[in-house]
Image (cartoon, rainbow, N blue to C red; front, top):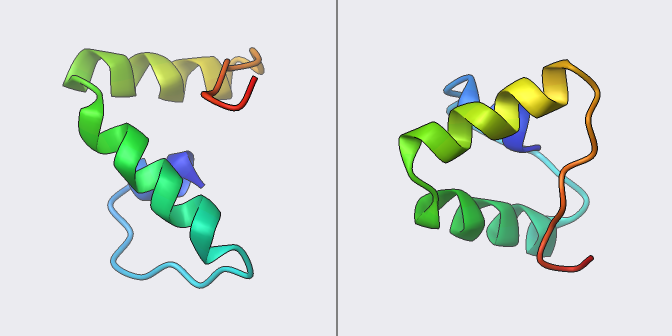
Length: 53
């Protein structure tokens, strides 16, 4: 979901709106560098720790 948002999507349709809200809130707190690192981790297949882990 974070990956789709980082690509500048205008709309997001999901069965999990609570998750979308949490992702947006976490991304809002990140610096641009942190957002880039999350995107790179996703592209390379690394696991990304979340606030739930």
